Length: 247
Image (cartoon, rainbow, N blue to C red; front, side):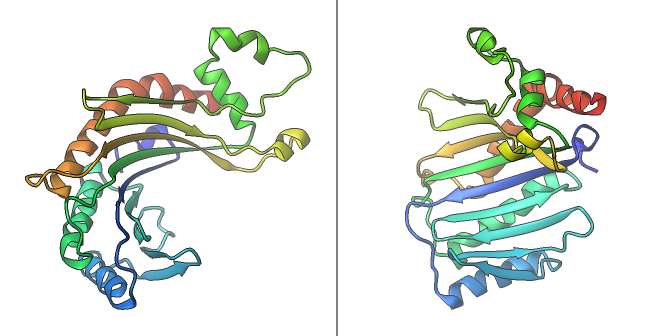
């Protein structure tokens, strides 16, 4: 089990490569790329498409731990849900990135951004917005507004983004995705929906001629893990888990 297993219901680490130019969309190029992915991960057997030109190859989800890879016109993604370890997930993403210069004719120049996202899901049958406000707190300037009589918390989705270097090329973002709807809050009929916490570290702009996608991905993943361990686990993830347990 990955190290975050005890503090969330589901953990995933995803890679997203956004491109400046469109990736090849012809049948032969798409199928050949996913065939090469499948050679490296034979348990990825489910291939399907969506109407917007998105192609997916993924493992069976029954075991709770699975891999997936997707390709769109200007985005390539790779995900690992409940991986054995972060290193295993990163190794998967690196192998996918190593294919793109040969299978999708992609150059280091054609990089709009390279992202690593660590996601943490919490199943909670209740008002996600209210729970987040309780755990994270509300800015002092808005506390009185949030305490208006006869009200319920309908929207609370804080997000903070920071640059991590002088050129603003390495950036990080903490975001939350509550899924409680106005209907659920009005009726009090909540489902077992997932409340998500995301830590994303991003490299923007083209890679240099001396840089490789794989090594840059490893750098971003290490940085993302460090930020999660240093700032998110004790201040956000564990308090969120505790609050849900006490409800």
